[in-house]
Amino acid sequence: GDNFNLLSPQQQDLVKTLLDNGQSHLFNNWPAPGVDDAEKKAFFDQLVLLDSSYPGGLVAYIKNAKRLLADSKAGTNPFDGFTPSVPTGETLAFGDENFIKFEEAGVREAKRAAFVLVAGGLGERLGYNGIKVALPAETTTGTCFLQHYIESILALQEASSEGESKAQIPFVIMTSDDTHGRTLELLESNSYFGMKSTQVTLLKQEKVACLDDNDARLALDPKNRYRIQTKPHGHGDVHSLLHSSGILKVWHDAGLKWVLFFQDTNGLLFKAIPSALGVSSTKQYQVNSLAVPRKAKEAIGGITRLTHSDGRSMVINVEYNQLDPLLRASGYPDGDVNSETGFSPFPGNINQLILELGPYMEELAKTGGAIQEFVNPKYKDASKTAFKSSTRLECMMQDYPKTLPPTARVGFTVMETWFAYAPVKNNAEDAAKVPKGNPYHSATSGEMAIYRANSIILKKAGFQVPDPVLQVFNGQEVEVWPRVTWKPKWGLTFSLIKSKVSGNCSISQRSTLAIKGQKVFIENLSLDGALIIESANDAEVNVGGSVQNKGWTIEPVDYKDSSEPEVLRIRGFKFNKVEQVEEKYSEPGKFQFKKA
Ligand code: UGB
Image (cartoon, rainbow, N blue to C red):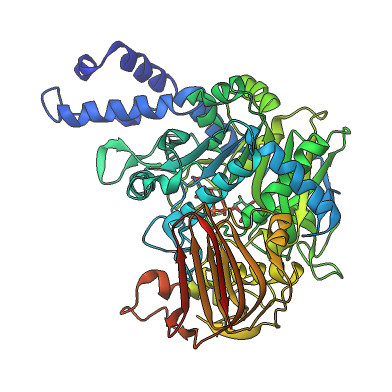
């Protein structure tokens, strides 16, 4: 009606198409112009935003929703015609000859890589109040995930361009309204953790409209008739955002070749990055997904070969909630169960993707970055005609290969879990309920996994390291190894670590070793207690001798104890810093640290 005059011509067009597509309810019983005009304007602004942030606009969204909702109502099997089987991929064992060869190739390639972190999720399963990338990956040094990621990228950058002009590895972070402000603040208040601010690009994903019914009528916000209700569309948005931002072309023009995608809370990931990138370049994979052995029913997707009755075949992630029904429907009557190896025969997707930039751009030019979507409505009853609450379309970044031609080189690389995957996703209560033998994916297990990996790596490099002890924190039994941490620039690759460890070295189970410097060489060190070595980049420090002190003890923290900070409560322990040796070398030069 008369409210139309409030609109710009662009908005008028949009409203007309919405009316043509079954959305007249949005404007029902609007008061005459003059009443609520500012709110009405805000409503149209929101429509324009929703329209511009979806490939093909709101009309495409509504059409896709109608189709997917009809399929869901009819119970159409998304895998109809496909038979699942176990695919074969590259398998890497940390530290062997093959691994070292791939690491070297990966470090060389890194100067032609760009990194993309998807960090728009709120982490509802974890229930932490802050953004997840601000959580300490471990509390020995208190380094948060974002700092660890940035320092790892910088270490790769440094190692990759040694002797040549310094390439700057671009770093994109996908945020959402839930995480954007706090991510920016974390970066700015920490000088971007040493990265150039121009190297970092934040791309914010928008939410998508909720849907009220099978006719894909957009849902109005129950609290405000002049707003559409919205919800997250999923990590798959990263592709359309990269496409529409134009940044891929900038990278391509600068000679880059690889885009590496990763998630918000995996403190081990960068131990797997150099070798995985080496696999991509050596095998010329257009798509390389990182995987780990998967426990049946673990909340990670399964990498599966799907072969269609018409002969088509692809290797793709089948999400954890779909794997069991798919298997049951295709001749595996027991569904998602472990084989005699104790693991699911399907490798677990850790959602770390390495894409070759050129073919990626070509594909996005065709699709606009649109990723195959799904809808998961909660129906009121078996007639499937009404929803319990509004729903929306969703998409996942690992579904990118679904539109690729069968000739595309799509591979995957299976890593041992201990050095590649330890996400922080579950709150203490849920983690304690995880079936015995399955990983907890909690702050407790995430931190302990870092010490475990570092201890095992030191052992492989020649250290004497005792067996861990088992302890229970927040109801979760975990292996407690010596608390070993190092800066990524100290231990970027296994060869680098080996070059810094020599002689007869040992560390006791109750010890803490924090290496906060690059050129720290450890020779004939016997550590029983806590030792922290910090050094500037132009200081070379040789560390040896026998260090013994009371060290840092571990004290349990109850997650219900509100007198403790949340970051400690969610992991269930804290360190009591009784006694330590702490050495700091801030001047250039050669130094010797040796306790008699
Ligand atoms: N994320 C966004 O950036 N935007 C969003 O809208 C949603 C999420 P979750 P999920 O490797 O551990 C994935 O919630 O989705 C970011 C894979 O789908 O942690 O349940 C978010 O910030 C699954 O196949 O995980 O499961 C986070 O960084 C499996 O491999 C990331 O997306 C599993 O991860 C993942 O979000 C895994």
